[in-house]
Image (tube, protein in one colour):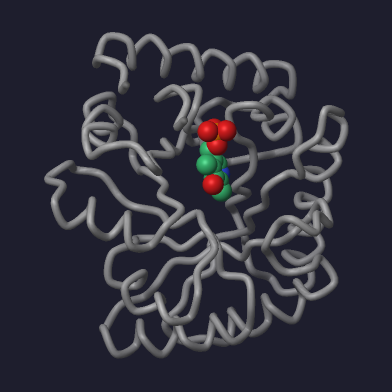
Length: 231
Ligand SMILES: *Cc1c(COP(=O)(O)O)cnc(C)c1O
């Protein structure tokens, strides 16, 4: 069951308070942390709730589901792909997503660049890195990130906004925090090495957003804390 708008507003306010508290501890400006509403597996109305509250964007993890919702939605909001992208879905993803946070291989970058070029579009991407070295997660290995970034920066039709990661599932909160610190340190090294700004660090979800903000997250991807469980 989706929350009513009033319920949603209270939940979103509470998430923003958590972000603000984490920012205060880290001496950061809360305006530097975007709340991305993860609407995956929720009905279209979830997108309307996020738009009405004034959020800039929603995140979907499946290309087909996101594309269908977007085609039917009249919400004034942008769409970000946060789930693994297979090459055979790349065309649909370029057509329907304003940004693809899950670019994780040179082959995929090549395909995205070609399709974006054909569509006359500059496709915004984040490079997904498996910064927690979690065998269960997709994303490029940290060691591969320099080559992946070099390939992405060379593509005429791609714009690289930064990096994205998902922390391993763990009872130990230090695991998430170390993962996020790894991603930030990797970003800092890559930015110095290439001169690319890589301003965005997409990291942190409902359960670990404080650790992510402490380590420099600029985009927290939140589903459950806004919409309730997905079953
Ligand atoms: C589902 C999902 C989220 C949101 O997770 P919650 O725990 O529900 O906040 C964030 N990022 C990605 C990549 C996801 O697939």
